Length: 584
Image (cartoon, rainbow, N blue to C red; front, top):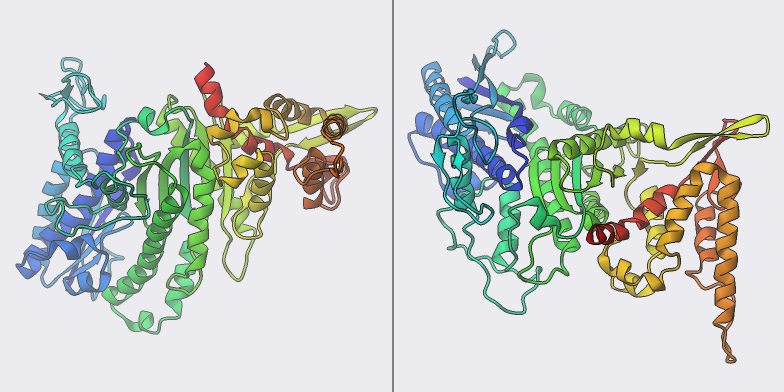
């Protein structure tokens, strides 16, 4: 038996070559259809001389596909098994034609090897799928700004007029149109949780990627699909969420070594074990993302634009965008569902999340870059914390309100490590404790709970996200005003003494205000559960060795002080982002 292997490189470059949301969604869907459907059909047609069932190809039954010779088609890898070398060569030739037509600009490595002899001695052949680069004589594609404009586009919902586009852009547009021709739900009092699946609807559509499938579920219930970042975010900021599984390589090796057949098994046997392990992680992540999205957005009114879009979900990698106010609740929900169900090695999938929140007018590649850097930062903390042999989930984030952003970790070192002179000594202040462990009874839950207590009671009762505009509209009912939030954030870099002084003044004013509200009845002027005094006491209880309400000394370090208050206030400030945008 012979194995035809294709490795796909520079996938993210292909997906995000254009900064338009429409193009990213189309590129992801086209990539998934090409690898998970078109190549599979070509391989089975050559080896088995049959046309496989479309339902099987759109599902994720790895055992059934393995019986047809398809060993892997996810995570940037494609392995197909053939009875002869000539069949394998025919497939590689046909695969190249398919890839050139659909995925111009992508780099692929291909090789054919005898399953019995192994692949170690067989080199890859590398091919960059040709994409015409614009010459000075020719006009660039006016939609993606990549490639030569070769034809006029049809007028679409997000284009005011016809423009000249490249063949690759035309292919994406056509596929996007097919993909988004959903059968919509009838008008009525139907919520996000009340869905009906019409198995006969949209039979001609091939939905090979999860992002399109989840969008289909929402649109079929009556929600509208955003075609641009401006439509997706509305008056809010954009959150880019990048996530990656923790320690998956080592977990797979440990899982594989427990399987006896790996010692003497064939390449196919070993590949099946790999597909079972990574397939279970992939399906668990898909399920958790879907359930997390449903739980987070279940209060959305019908016919409103979807405030989220999954851009990539492959293997244990995830990239999605949403309105900023929903970002942290969505991450919590996804992680909660992940922790509830184990994967193939009987342990839950844990992930590191990077969240970059900024204006959607900033270049997307910068937002994506920042989210991935934050993801990597969260991974560093996860590696240093083992729980039952598994690295816990972790989250890091950055909220950007300026017109540009650089490496978020470098910016944090510059902005959140401060030196203050006290008499003849120097004190070092660490104004953030990011990243945070994520999960039940973990650090992030503590600061999320504290941030939520800064919101008005009506906002908490409605279970609305931290940054919901309702909170900004009810500012007069806040425990701490917007001005006081920013005043406290700007005082933190001055040191723990100045911060303590300001907090005591705020508490004194809050107590005085409470005393003025005491009536002649049996009311009491004692601090309410959500008074400033109670809030700062709760903050102090998070760490027992406080020197003040906000700061505490680092163990084993002289004159080093750190605080979680800045991170809490940053989460609270989410509710003001949309308001600032409306005023500007």
